[in-house]
Length: 299
Length: 259
Image 1 (cartoon, each protein chain N blue to C red):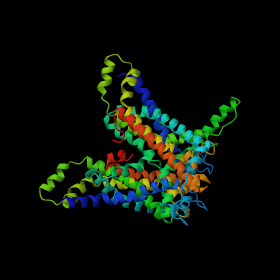
Image 2: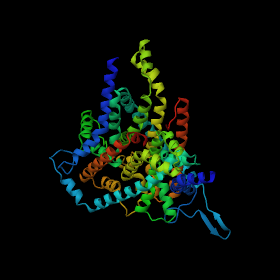
Image 3: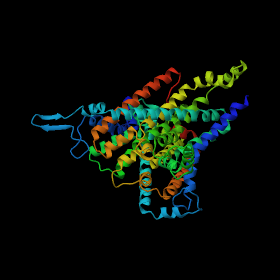
Image 4: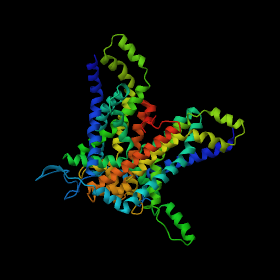
């Protein structure tokens, strides 16, 4: 009964398939189309289809992309956001590695509890976690006074920790750290301890064991974690919006402004499409690197 | 065993745990701080919780958040469970991509594309558009949790039921469904938590009138920071902990596959 089989298949898979087609694929395609459109007279988007003397025809333009390419400000902001994402990814890696390794090497009965301790703060509200850093980095808080006390002692100008690139980086690291810890742990936990025992028996020093065995084996985990941190960090808008002030602005803030304040949707769409392409290209590159390193990213 | 590197590693690990927890502890501590400026400790108080209870706008936002999360998690649990079954059993064209892609692009981009979409089809932005948007991203998470449960299931059980004469529906109803039930419940709780916590996608699909807790917190942070924010934050942290405790009990592995 192949026809009945097909019917059940569509009864089960059809509804979610249709829903995502309508609320994920369609909006994405509309955004692609909008990036070739003109801004509307009162903001938003002008109709993509025009009806005039020559009949119905598309009214499309490449202006959004040429404007984007001609304005160095946007290229600079993309570069700045990329640089932030790279720094955040590296810092997360440095912070996550010892923790993931410790959990992986701890006795088995502790591991789940130690891992849960990593996940718990990550499930608390996103804005609350950003807001916490507003308190910590605030001008009246102990940390700012300590830093400025030291600077005054060195006869240097006082600085503001909050509303600065520094605050954006700290916030992004804090928000994304668990995304690095979890895949790293998942990888490190599978390592065979016999390899390290063998290396030690043959006279390898601890750091040799780490750099020649543990780290190379963990490369797929490192790459998976790097993707999970890098992508959202590159597209961040809430963290720089709340912690960054004017100097910590990222490309995500500009996209938000184009949609909500300037209301130039076609240009905002063009910026979003460039970001999407960047994300997809980097993910593909990382997936390729991970396959070469002998692992899969999405297990 | 060489002791020194292990000790160093534990010290580093404790440092990272402190980095993860101190900010949240500071927020919780400050929610009981009598000082209005919130920088110095000036005595214990529950005043900010009282302020919170009298803040009509905040209560309305909380009601909206709960309503959206209830509807979004209910619908996405049904659709996500179907998607999980379909992913596991059938090779539906595009379905794996439709499930994974929303997780792989920055939320900001989903948010703005949904904004254009709703405005172009003349769908009024408000509670309904937020719900529709939340369902879309929750489906993926539920589907992944349910599928991971199905992967761990012994296929021989269903085959045995079929051999004994059960119809496909009976074998689903009496074998598969009870076995994957913890995964479905964990998926539903995950969807509820994600929905109630979501800021970015809500921000773009909310329009002017609808307000949710995260949107209200955002406004308070951006405009006037009062210690009331600490109180609502503390409540949200505790609420999430309770939901997670239930989810962890039902399906320990589900929490990790959700990321």
